[in-house]
Amino acid sequence: MTRLLALLCAGASFASIQRHGVQLRQGLPITLRESTVALSGKSHLPKGRRRRYEQATYSPSKRFCLACQPALHRNAVQGRASTIPVGTPSASSPPRSKLSKRIVTGWLLAFAGTAVIFSGDVLYTLVLVLVAMLAQHEYFNTVMKTGVKPARRISFVASLAMYACACKFPLQHQLGLPLGFAAVVMWFLVMRPKPGSIADISTTLMGLVYTGLMPSYWARMRCMKDGLGVADGLIQNVDCAARWISPLPVANDVVTQGAVTYWFTALGCALSDVGAYFGGKKMGRHKISEVIPAAGGASPNKTVEGFLSGATMAMITALIGAKVMGWPHWGFTGAVYGLLISVISLVGDLMASMLKRDAGVKDFGSVFPGHGGILDRLDSYIFVGPSAFAFVTIFLPFVERMGVAASSGAVLGAFTSVAVMCAISRRDFWSEIGNPFQRLDSASVPNATPKNDSRAAAVFDEEDEGRL
Image (cartoon, rainbow, N blue to C red):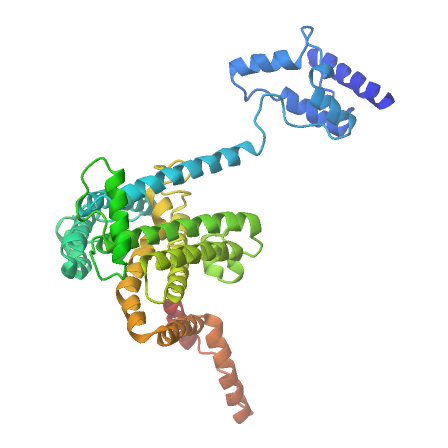
């Protein structure tokens, strides 16, 4: 009771002295001092809310009244006064509202993507071209902040040609990149007043590959009618469902093997991102920089637990899809496909993070609320397209013909080769290899002293940097 009366007297004295322009902060307890500062800091509120704030905080005589603030009174008695003023949102509101916005946007994108996938070859290609051109526009706007001047117009034209070939002329699709590169070089030589620099040409070619060639494999897979191992019964069932749902007549190119495979692949990418996000938030303890320093430098918030959560979600989705689509040896092919999707999705995400970090921007754009630009939302999908196309057109027939044992050996050999190449490319690998030879030379020639050949060391470092 004595403590309560002391706090009441201190609050009344503070308000009375503050009315006469005197600041009494040092004589108050720390908890009550923080509370009064928070209650007096109302300049950030709008004018109407500020008036209601003052009416709720002060009495008509402008005296501080703890009775008007029961929560502050209770916390002050317990020795932990609240520092959140009345009428202001809590600290957890912005992240929660941002997460809600991300969830709503994600669901809308999921429904819109499903409608576009099952909309026919022509309409799908038109939507994909529109999205890809906007993504390429975001890419060029981002890289131009680093001082380069890419040839944007010719890159747009070459990308359009790639999408048209991927949908209608798949056999000529592989000619898009070399012909597009030749067109880019001709543009720099003919249409520019000065010759283009290496940075300008390489940045243009990067945009042509990143937002032109690689996403076009999604269109090539979508427009395939057969050869992807999807069961005919599933195609008939999905076609009947589409005809029952759609108020318009359904064409023959709406439900195809390519469309069904595309939908399950895109679903695996989406759930991989979702699993990685929430898994990293809830269970993330080990940063990915502890395993791969360069990847951690590109995206410091990535965690090993987040990647494992995303890989688990992608593998579950791929297993269900492989079973439903009737893939050969669906347990093996589904698991490998899900792991491939998760790994390549992470590579695409890190690639976008490297570009944004180098350009000094947080997002590529602001098209999708809570997600950023088109490249921010579709960065992982870009790299998955070529890998998924290669898997369903090369690896699936190989598994069906050779069996699980030979296919497992091929997968293990591929992963081993990649691991060996990564190990060889590291600088410390070559330093460890060089040390034993240096010790052997020193032992064979006792009086020999190691030579400091700075020129050879510079050449070695240059070669090592190029290999990295």
